[in-house]
Image: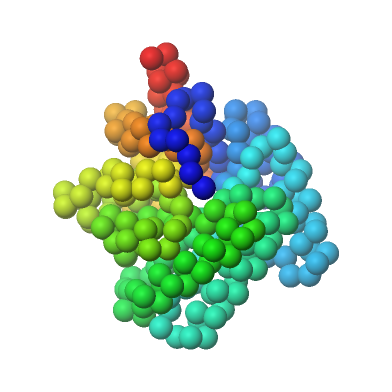
Length: 271
């Protein structure tokens, strides 16, 4: 899939996470607070297993209309490049299963991770990761789903030079997490800038995760001041990313961050 680089504030969709369990309340809250979409994170413990369960899940997603829904797999230690063949086989089948599920719900975008929940890459194979991610990207494409890779705060995808190679060699789309970019060592050491995660493949950035930064043991911090994120939001506008997920799973921080982002977008629209 290709898209034009550069977008305007009017082209954007702000989305929120599915942290409200009741679908009706989730939809009501999103609409009342002027969100246009839901970024649906799968929970491994709650995946449907039977055809009947799948049908009920698909209906649940359909009930969120007119909100757009995109999908996210935040699975700890589920890796396509694990050195253990059995672990790789389990991961490949899991992601194929989820792609089929997303396809039944007419989903178009799915975000994956490499090395999530790990503190070492020694159990991962670089070449095996690339080969299997390429296969999953193609499996998704065959079902009209763009599989995207997210940059993390640690590991291979926290280094812009390695992240670029993973995207280029697999054909994956990009989910740009601006909080991870802010806190990763590659940026904090000033070896790279936050924009280096996206400028080599601006036309492939389909999703953005918005919050200020991530602190280990604390989680995602909301945005308090526009100056803290303005440069990163400018970069998203410049590269044409039109799906912005405020990735905060509690009400006060979510709405605080949305107020800051709304002010930014109003200023952009007035230019």
